Length: 163
Image (tube, rainbow, N blue to C red; front, side, top):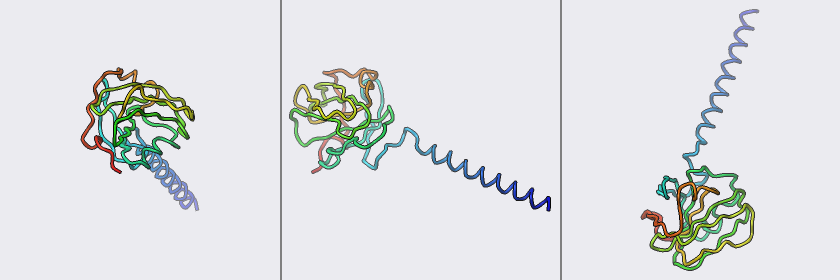
């Protein structure tokens, strides 16, 4: 009888160890190197930092943006690619965390950088015509050294809108 009890206890310990190691593997798979969506991504150098940038280049994806997400890793962002260059305005409907937004013209020059508050429905306009907008976590644009007038290389996969 004692050996059956030892077998049961050791079996329970093995199952528990397997369960907890599986949890750790799953949690490890949720690292900051993976975007929170299935959108295409590209790597971009912004200021003095490298970022994994999700590409929002269609109307439905641009309209949804970063809404309904709880957070974004600090080395991630989203580029909104429009078919033309014109004054732009963004708001934060259903966006749960504050963001920086850098508006860029078609040449990749930063037109303006603004800060946006979570859930704020007030429009945040560009200071000039923009073909692109890049959203980063609040404070990251400054930490990366970005400023109006800087040039950003737009990768080929993020240059054009798809409509």
